[in-house]
Length: 110
Image 1 (cartoon, one colour):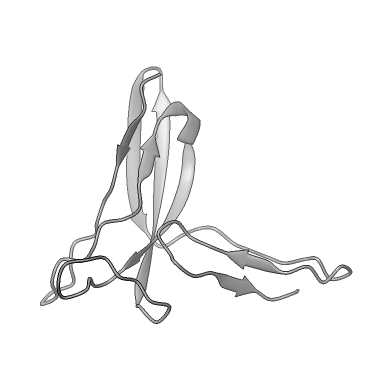
Image 2 (cartoon, helix red, strand yellow; image 1 turned 90 degrees about the vertical axis):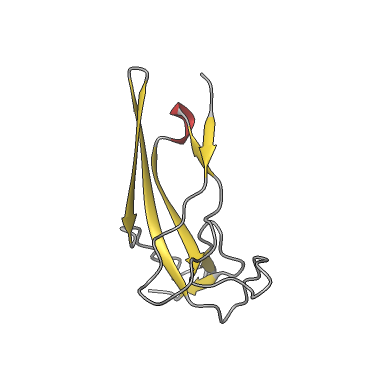
């Protein structure tokens, strides 16, 4: 099947400039399901996308649902994803890295 990709950006908060675009979202049968994106709330003054660990971000979920040749794409602020590090015996580390985010968030044991 033919794959299409897109980027999105939320409407700006009142009085704020338009923020940067999301990472690339693949819209195809292979990408069916939900994906989380971290989108910074501001761009660098010269218009270049620069994201630091201290940059405030919004998380958005995108659901891709192909059905008999049609494709539905829905956007929702926030995320239903839950990360739990249950590796108590091995004490393995777990990090979450949303699409578009340059840094990870460590998930504590438990």
